[in-house]
Image 1 (cartoon, rainbow, N blue to C red):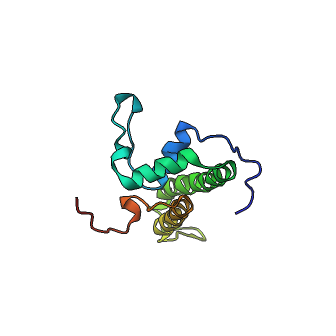
Image 2: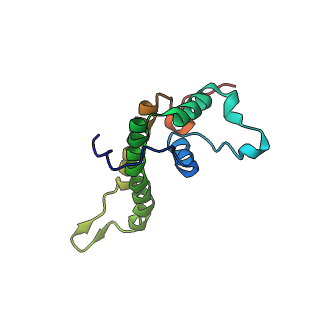
Image 3: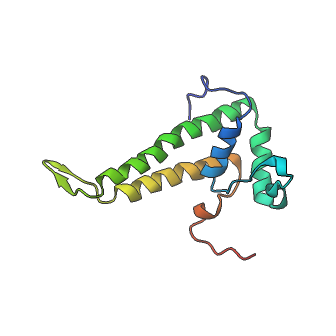
Length: 133
């Protein structure tokens, strides 16, 4: 993807890190002030944390480009609920698969972000695979 030249190559903000974790399908890690940095105890979460804290300037720009694609896809999914009660209005016909299609598109971009970061997506991106602890 091109278009990263105008994006910041500075470190990710705490909010951007939260969004990267969230879009990659990982849970919140809580306040670091508690000393309970749970991601340290899980290999995949630890790998994600290391990567988002160690990206090069060009890689940071690429992550921000992914985030700029993901934000509107997520918002559009929320807006799709406005049409769920209408099948037809005048010449307009509702796409009965709109929500499913939007979820699939959002999921595709979330998986692309995971692939770029070199991590496996969290549980909700793993297509219902069984997890045994």
